[in-house]
Amino acid sequence: MFGIFRTFLALLVLIGHLYGPFQLGIYAVFGFYTLSGYLMTYIMVNNYGYTLEGRKRFAINRILRIFPTYYASILISLFLLYFFDSKIAEFQPLISLPQTINQTFQNLFLLFTIDSAPRLSPPTWALTVELFFYLTICIGVSKTKKISVVWFMASAFYTIVVLVHSPENWAARYFPILSGSLPFSIGALIYHFRNSLSSFLKRLYLDNPIIWLALVLLNFIYSYKVGNNITSHWLFIIGFYTNLALMTLCIATLAVFETTLVDRKTDTKIGKYSYPIYLIHWQAGALLFSFTNGALSKLIFLMLSISVTFILSDILIRTTVNPIEKLRKRIKSTGINVRLKKLKKLV
Image (cartoon, rainbow, N blue to C red; front, side, top):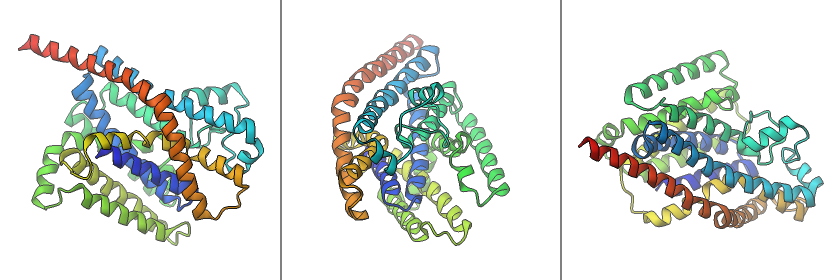
């Protein structure tokens, strides 16, 4: 059910950005990081391997996964800027044309910090974090259980130091690349300790992913109640790290236990919408804002923005994601066949 889960997270990012509260997007991004830590470790160990050839295939497949759809999304941004430049600037100033070689380079190769501007697809600062940890996982930072534990301990130490030094500055534990190390390392631990986790959760009768997903939602409701008027930064800290713990257990149960909510094919189809939704929800909102001059109520604007986002996402899936996916599958299957041949020789 990872497909539904990813699209659920993408929709939370959309809602957090276009409606609020902002915590929804923050909580969801760390869920994405944790899931990526698990999935990237899984496919490196099981599909590609740590040979030079395996690493090369992993890197090519990650590039094909990230960049073509991203480039399609910024084409939508360029289209909007051509026709609605002033309205786009009013709605989301980050969506604007690069003015320097450095800005162009950043937008072409996803080399952002949170302060980088313009960003033709505003949320893509997080893709810079993702790409960095794809690289470290490819090198082998989560190759074994022991290495992953060391990685997690170093990440936890960094987080604690930043938290103690500046507890009220949540951004310092969220935006920098090193802040993503904690959820990514937790994702790697989920892979390596999945059997122990499954036994533990079974004994407690907590082996249903729906339980943890419900608790994730309850924690999101808590974040909504806290809202933008945080009376104590410790309330935010508690909610933030409670979310990370619940995301961890939700991903662990999804990784180990089967759910009959939908079949795998449907789950895969739904999951394809997650990345396009993440990339183009600001553009969808900007398009709607340009046509309505911001006259809609906040809730109506959100509902229509979701609809426009799904329409644009479907276009991206049909024109970019599906054609590229065929190539990615061939690269992946070739790598698996190479590994099987090597295993047969050893046997």
